[in-house]
Image (tube, protein in one colour):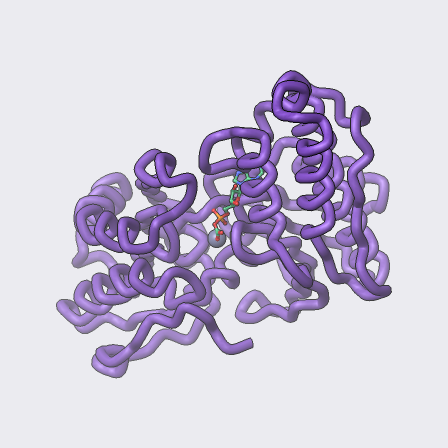
Length: 331
Ligand code: KG4
Ligand code: ZN
């Protein structure tokens, strides 16, 4: 069994996963409400709370899986990218847990976790496949020929899709985290009410979301606060439609270009209702099968870190004692 920890941002996560990819437990303690009053994640507050929560979350993950540390054969942890102080808590805990029993430790790339989330469970995706990863800090299309690595074939040139959701939500006066709130509000609005740009920069597979964000800013400013408030749902629905359309269009283009029959999505934005529905429809039209993970496997979680650890060469004890977290990982 693999015990994985994930603390790259504001969720304290631990999971137990079998080598075949069966999820025995997947515990997520969200600090969302704590950061809400600041309108975003405060790195130092996140680190302190990871420190307070990590032992209890790890104990919960073991208990829910019905195993003890003695039955764990490998420890895995997110090494980066993310908030350095937050990552350090997970890395230090994982090193301590592994060293206490001289277990091997896998140092995992957080984004690799999002890419392979669909390899978990009863119906795992198999390589080769394409994966659209859209999270708060990253948005890219990956080609996976072997689940141990991935090749980025297109990426955002400016904002990440999740960032666009969060900034848009803030412009509409919604709370933090903005993505889920905007998703909810969009259901009450008309997605055709406003014509926001669906950008597709260059002739490759890159994305750009800074234009749509600016378009929303101008629309809200031109309408005035009162009118913008009254038409909040229409603005949210139209804004979401623009982001989702851009994501799905590029993904469909990638499917055509790469000629791969399997498609997956991952990252927090993959929890978005419209993206999930639209991508499923588009995949059916294209004749490719799409894997859409459960929402708790899209947003940050440790099960996906264990998933990636299955395909990552672990470091034997005591080689990882000087392992360091990394806010950014080399490409
Ligand atoms: O993958 P994730 O949990 O953390 C990072 O690695 O960044 O992604 C978080 C992002 C946030 O920007 C959040 O607003 C967005 O995912 N998100 C959503 C939804 N749920 C989370 N965006 C749109 N619709 C959602 N339902
Ligand atoms: Zn993430």
